[in-house]
Amino acid sequence: MSGLALVTGANRGIGFAVARGLCEHGLTVLLGARDGSEGEKAARTLADTGGDARPIEIDIADDASVAGAAAAIDAEFGALDVLVNNAGVKYEFHPAPPSQASLDVVRETYRVNVFGTMSVTLAMLPLLKRAAAGRIVNVSSGLSSMGLASVSGSKHAQKAMLSYNTSKAAINSVTIQFANELRDTPIKVNSADPGYTKTDMTHFDGNRSPEQAAQVIIRLATLGPDGPSGCFFDNDGALPW
Ligand code: NAP
Image (cartoon, rainbow, N blue to C red; front, side, top):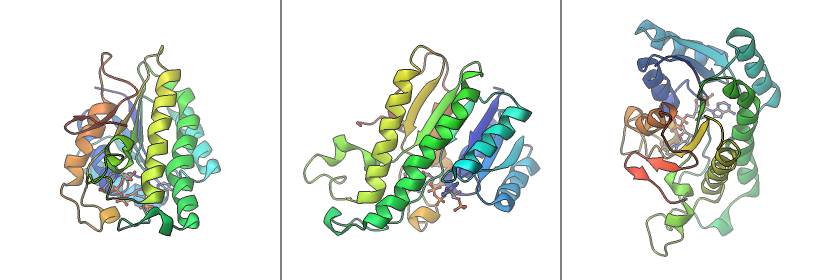
């Protein structure tokens, strides 16, 4: 498979594993990082093992940075085949009753996870439309699933995190909105739940490696023409919204 992919937050964790996997699929991968030197370091690691990986500076919470990255991709490549909206933050470590949440934390989480993801999607969409078959993968979380969390007493019902879970639920809605608008185009838009993964975000307390977590994201990023759009998947299959 050839083509150009942008993975945001690709300097570490799941994003880095996704970038590595997409390189292995033969794609040229732009490793998005808000710290340029971290992006360069990560791209060099992949390039050293034969991947066509290049760093690109992008802070998804900064509209000017996002616009700059889109302009740079436009100038050098003119189109984008794959966008993986992976960059994200989670400030709550333990579940807590929503009545105890801090609105400042909610706002800061939304600034990155929700507005940042929307900003990147809007900026990159014209480039994705110029590709033969654009793919957008929004990295969500099983914790966002209203279908699972609304079952009283369920594991998901017990994992309340007002900022993070609702920010990822908003991203799922973003997935549906864009998938519907783009239904008559070759572009496919899906949400992925990578699962509980050993990264900085979980203080390395997950039950899977970033490489395992990346699998579902890579699958959705490389879907064929008959693949789904407007859906939510983890590694085992479809998840309820
Ligand atoms: P991570 O190790 O904390 O990595 C997060 C990445 O996002 C880093 O590269 C970070 O960059 C980047 N980032 C944060 N804010 C950014 C911004 N404003 N602009 C650009 N990049 C930014 O976390 P992870 O576990 O790999 O998470 C990756 C994605 O998977 C996230 O969307 C997360 O919500 C999702 N997820 C993770 C788990 C899990 O168990 N780990 C489960 C479900 C979903 P810096 O290095 O500059 O901070």
